[in-house]
Length: 161
Image (tube, one colour):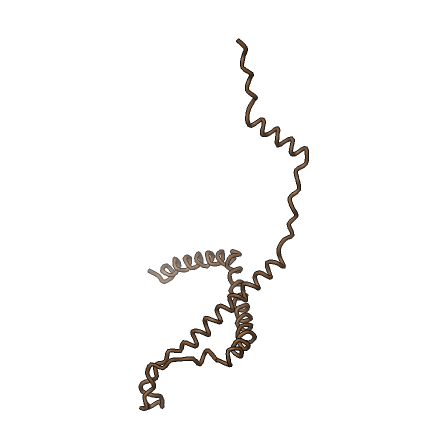
């Protein structure tokens, strides 16, 4: 069997996959998703900077210049013996609860900032709604006629005996 006979079906399958991939990419959803991810990452950096650079410093100052990231509890201190690389053979075991608190505070503040920004954007782009107008007399009469036709003819009066 010649090599071209073995490679031909593989190339045809590859072309089919390529066409399928092109159709997948051409759908608007993929491009919209990519734009959303990129804009989300940029927006995330803006909100993180707002929280970290503008909101947290006054909060830290109000709490007595506490840096939450420095708060930790040492379970076991590092050993005095150093390894060949100059690091302790048994490193310290530290529970850095301050970093967790900082991450928790950052999350809450970021969520609040995003909530208010989305609320602001929704208010700016809220479509102006006009109150519904009362139907005209013609429309009201036609509606009554339609409703009467749906109920059928009026019942005949009882016959006198």
